[in-house]
Image (cartoon, rainbow, N blue to C red; front, side, top):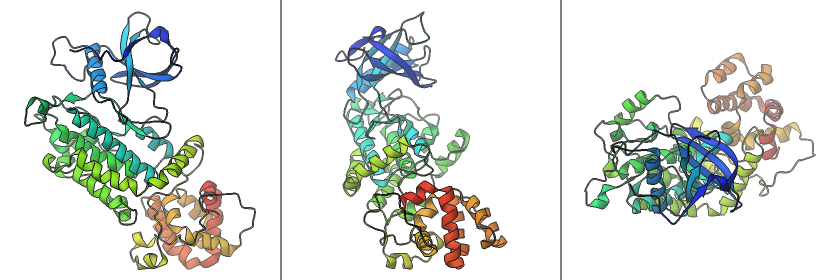
Length: 457
């Protein structure tokens, strides 16, 4: 097994200080630490002795062998969108004073991963940022495949983020050199690995040998996760996924499909997502083909990147806020478009074009709102309130007799907050006039003050 590339140096434990454990698992541990000479933080990945997720067919495999593999893969795939390796660690990490251990010295990514970001903001990201992440992952994977490597474990936790929320691919513990580089017609890479929710249907067969189409499928599921802001099949066991994915089941696209004709470029990205998770490996587009789509979509939203990053960063710095300061799946529409939507789901999309052009500069208003102003606020922000209000039942209870028992039972019976809000809007709020809308506004301000403030109320 080749040693790690000599272009990066050996980093001894004496060069490091301020150790902090930031991650751990079956593979081992990841630490954040400060390099004394370099003056900045780095990440150290140290594998547990005896853990060998790949190359187990070698008679004398070891954690050092695994680290050599991963380090060499990182060097080979080094680019702007892949995590950079600074060197190889050797020393005594915290809690170990008996044996020298080896590790990889890497960039420290201050914003964690896409997974941790989703957990912190509790929902989807602003469209411009989501589209940029989709494009940057495609760029990293295109470069990786161009080097005859595959990732094998593409998922939100392995897409790390800089402080500016730019994406870099990480965790090449499951990477392989594609044997297509050795004149094989099958892009065989050795061994199944990765999280089961992101595995293609063919990977559940015992005889399967991973190929680059594996990564293309994973990218499709990852796109869904980026757009929806959560993990697919949150409660599904391995056995259920193993059974249903080969049968054609995929993550639910109902919410995304509602928006794809109203968010510029989203329809193209959704089409790409579904082609990537096609049941046939041969029908999945290459990452070069993915890039054509993601780059085109991103160009439509580049002007919104700065604000999207600022909004998310502000949200991360104010974790006690009830709601994020952006709207998911709420595009602007004209009044004519709103009136043309006859179904309950589409009818919730109302015009917001009457809102001031300065709506992004939210300030505290000292004026006293009349009941008519409150009612107008409730009407003009219907679509976003349906998507964002989570204390639906608490607000419904505060409305008291304004919501009759039959309507209350109907609201309570709905499984999601969005469905509850749609019932509330289509019944008591719509029929109750200014008085009910003003009361709804007051309850909303009590339970979601940050949301009301952001919307100018």
